[in-house]
Image (cartoon, rainbow, N blue to C red; front, top):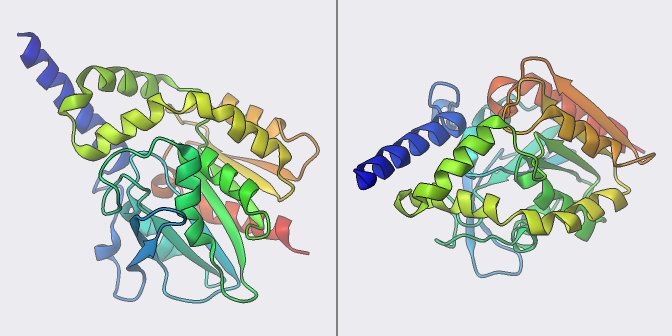
Length: 277
């Protein structure tokens, strides 16, 4: 009976996480858009022997948007954003190390190693400026990237940033996941391992955020049950007098790249405006 209960719990968790992060109805993928709208490319990770898989808009534009996704990391579910970008933006979003089509197979629990690996996406064309976006678990990773490569990042957007404070949905799913982790698929197993190992690494990420001189935009949905809105407001307030904008999205949930693409594009416009000379 105990084994059956665990199997049921594993199935429930898999369905629950998949519904939250990868609903086909809510997330059109790259295959749903005309050829040339976006393309899948291979990226050699910075400082590591891994090959990363990414989606990008195949054009040159004044602003390059580099996205560090949450967990699980599935770039396909950013397709609606790539398709909706104004012409002055181009975007690249990778499956982070340990997820989907990217190497390695196992978890890369160090947010520092993730930041180093994803730094390869910061390469820009001459005259091009970079807006770095960190989504959920990816927000601390993006913060480290902005701190480590200040000459390559002109603005930072923290979307639904997860710096350890869990809302009721996140607490429920990660608690259940700890019970059934060995039976989960690779991506969900790696996701739970990432979340469980994040806390000791957050002081460095918070210190990096406090020291950033580039503009920071914090974007958060008012209906987010994964990460409390109050934690996002506190994160923005921790910047003191440094250039910071706090944007809330009425009725927006944790996955603003699905529910609220115009709000996300607006945040990119705000970041670009704050970074203009």
